[in-house]
Image (cartoon, rainbow, N blue to C red; front, side):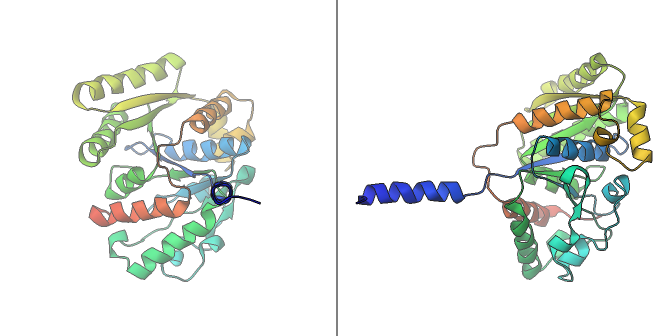
Length: 295
């Protein structure tokens, strides 16, 4: 016969077994357009799926969405239909390469702050229903440092800042890090050097950014490596395929797999929630403070 203490311990153990694993949310951003952010998001998602992770890719550029175009997908509806209650979120989810799930973006979605309480609750519940079968959510944010981008970055567990060898790229990367750290208390960022000619160039880009942040900001940057400039990526884009599948032995595909392993090995933050609705709740909270989704 089980004692009261044993029964309690057993019940606690069963609850732990039943509790979902935390969903890792990675926001891919960069400030400047043209740094290859969407290609990073797409190939990171597919490479994570190759590690047997259950991955969802969310196109959070709700004004000029293009993940579906990059992958040759044809969504019958978008997130605005879900927000208006015309479609279920499950109807919006597309099957992407490697078994990833894709939530396409939308154009003209009005301010998140202007959504009614019922619309808030419906959106949270919609993501909650999907969240139990996921390991990682990759969020491809819009270009720039709009309120939308800041809201998504604040709500995520990890912010992956993509930079390339252009002065404007480093300037915008610094700007988004500065805004998130000074105004919103975010102290940790991951940096990826994209479209570089060599590993040395990638390290130099990272070091340039570090010199400025070390001098003016109280933040910690982590170098996640570099993605080489490779003609294979251009060919994959033209064919509307992920390069990790189209040219699996290419240098750029190997680099994306290395990035995926590093992301997957990162420790989950203390107190990370187990389900996606908490990500959406934070997103709505932060958006309501000052932001808009979809400008």
